[in-house]
Amino acid sequence: MAKKKGGLTVTKVWELCEPIVKDFGLSLWDVRYVKEGADWFLRVYIDKPDGIDITDCENVSRAIDKPLDELDPIESAYCLEVCSPGLERELVRDEHFMQFIGADIKVKMLRPIEGIGREFGGVLDAYDNGKVTISDHDGENHITINKKDASWIKLDDFDM
Image 1 (cartoon, rainbow, N blue to C red):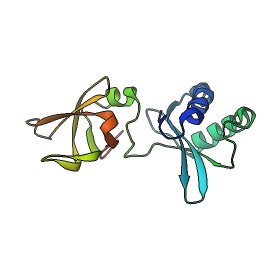
Image 2 (image 1 turned 90 degrees about the vertical axis):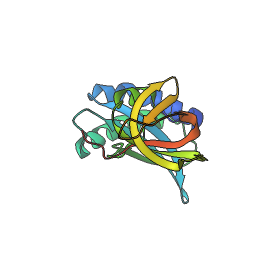
Image 3 (image 1 turned 60 degrees about the vertical axis):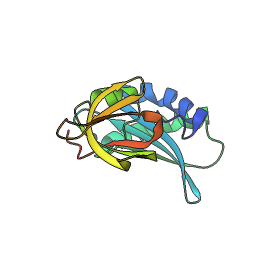
Image 4 (image 1 turned 45 degrees about the horizontal axis):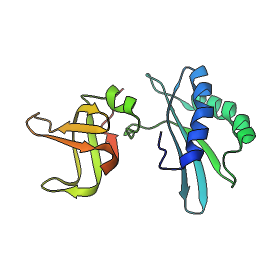
């Protein structure tokens, strides 16, 4: 869960939504509270192994709408969106990294790494306590970065 993007609000929404999402046989991928232009969005990302469809999004949206209104974690007006994390999904939680060891990823660092740059790709080799090990596709060169030093780490060419 992206606590840095919405803080306590995101934590409260996560705690409310997770059991509801699980009741539908889905997993809660992430929760984001973000501003785009003049509008605020509460985005609840859901997933399941064989992918989700619009019906899954509709069902979860309907199921969390009333409890969200009752909890009232957000004082201002916002738009609720229930959606898929997408094909190039951002790896956020520890479980995401563990699940996709061996997958192609792309990384955008907060600051450039000497000799590599700010954006690069590779294979997710290992993950341990916030440390991400990435190799080139030949497996010859490895780099370990702190997850917190990356703007984002996403799956590249995701194939379920």
